Amino acid sequence: MSDMPDHRHQRPYVVVDVFTTDRYGGNQLAVITDGRGVSDVEMQKIANEFNFSETTFVLPPSDDRNTARVRIFTKVQEVPFAGHPNVGTAYVLGRQGHVFGKPVGRTMRFEEAAGLVEVELLDGDDGVSGAAIAAPQPLAIRATLEPATLADCIGLQPDEILLTRHTPTIVSVGLPFCVGEVALASLSGARARYDAFATAATDGGYADATGRFSTFVYARIGDGYDRLRARMFAPLSGTFEDPATGSASAALGAYLASLDPLSEGTLRIDIAQGVEMGRPSEIALKIRKSGGQVAEVQVAGRCVQTMRGVLDLADGE
Image (tube, rainbow, N blue to C red):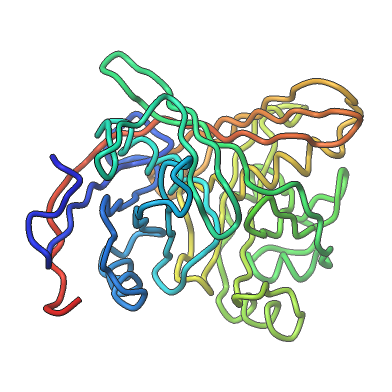
């Protein structure tokens, strides 16, 4: 299918499941492969219409050395960066083979509000099977929360928040999340409580500049932290729970790597998410440390296409 619209009031789209090889697993993503001429207001309405955790719009880059400009919308707002939208958009463009008349290579670079996102395509038996992306910003540790605050947000008791390695902390490599550790048995019982999120965001002052406050809670599988299971709750952004969150995984992985005594080398972490939602996802992290600092965070995953079609825009858009 061409990435050029057939009519000035139509745009092609592709829907993919990200961080999975099983159709109807992972995290859904709608990719509008030609967002030219679509207004900001219309982009937000389209994202709400798809009703996925995120929808992306592909636009020509401002710098010809880059592949595309990618805008990412949740159901209620635009965000500067997110993981599964980048992985899924790269997969769609890689399978398409071209964007705005230019062929795409094995590596791509997306212009986003959070910065440039480096992308490397992954191969499978029938061609492009997924992508690995590099986080656009270095690790930022923003604030710590009382265990009771996080527990209240996710419907647990304060003593269910484990403090062996760290207290609940807001961290970011492009998009902020409050990360906290719980036991595996507690993880399955977590539930987002909208009022508690709103209180933490406003009265607690934990919201970011866009009003977002999101949590990413995890449990270890085994003694180390190379295998984790996680859940992400962001009810203030219209997503009570997300089945796969690359940006949160990258932030958590970077933070855990920063606590690791390793000075030079690469750490690998595999995160299972979406299990409780019936949309199991697998997120692979690779974190490189240099001089005791986190130097690079890469998030990788596979994808599968579920549908494609044509989006009808309102007359005059």
